[in-house]
Amino acid sequence: MKRTPVVLLCVAIPVVILAANKQPSSNPTNDTSSLSSVKPKTFDADGIFDNVLADREVIKQDFAETDKLMVALRGDKENLAAATEVNDAVADVLERTAYEGWLLEMYNHITNDQAREDAQKLMRGHYAFLAMMTAFSVKSVHMVARDCKLKELCALAPKVERDVQKIADRYQALSKD
Image (cartoon, rainbow, N blue to C red; front, side):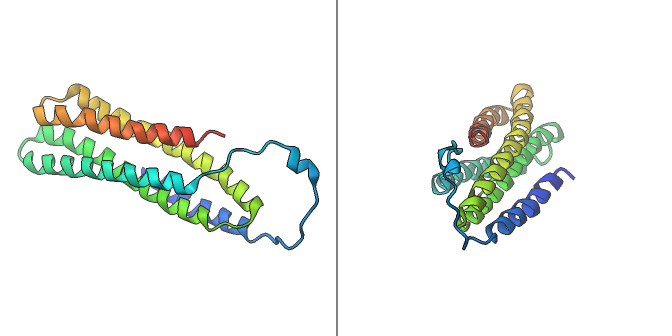
């Protein structure tokens, strides 16, 4: 149920992007008023994708560490529940970065200038949504870090919190014009 908004975005955004990209571009207009208007800064999709890859490597390492801790905690219900909370937050962020990479790849295939502008607006909204969802993941991990009782979890949770916060901050920055 918590993945429903992500699934909806997975379908809606590419459909809108592809539909906008199919607009006829054979009739060039000579509208000089649009040249003087201030356009939002364009996405550096390649640069963003490089950041996505770097973030994914960090968060994959966090996932491996939390997964390893969960295996070690099999009989410890209280600490296992806390480690599972951290692991679930990391898994959610991994899913978001995978979707982000896919969306950036779709964006790179748009050739029509108007469609690219429309796609940028949609992507900024997408990034605002990702920032909000990732902020929830940060809060979840923060609560575990604050309340943990197990030494290994108390060492791991703040690191995961910082890593996830970095991704949330990147999403927030990308949501701005």
